Amino acid sequence: MDLRWLSAPDDEVAAAMRTVRRSARPSWVPSRRKVLAHVNDSLILWYVCVVLLYWGVVTDGAGDGAVTPATIAGLAGAAVVLAVWLLGSRLLHRWAAR
Image 1 (cartoon, one colour):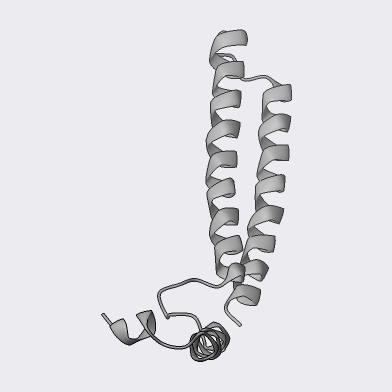
Image 2: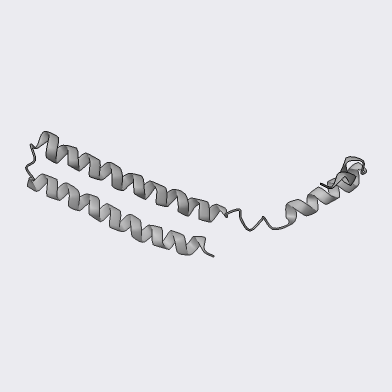
């Protein structure tokens, strides 16, 4: 612990704080872009869980276990949304890696 800053003059402390703020962040801190990519990944997982749960309830609960054309169309639509989202996620990860 560096205690000299407790008794240092105010202008010296202010100059040191400006220098520290301009320096790069620690290597373990993710950038905002990477945080956005991680949040996107979490949302994709939630989307998959909610969609599978919803269509499971529709098929088993409301449809008595019968798979109807509406169920297949709904799952196909959800799969298309997921595919587009995964493509966008891949582009987001490339952008975040810069």
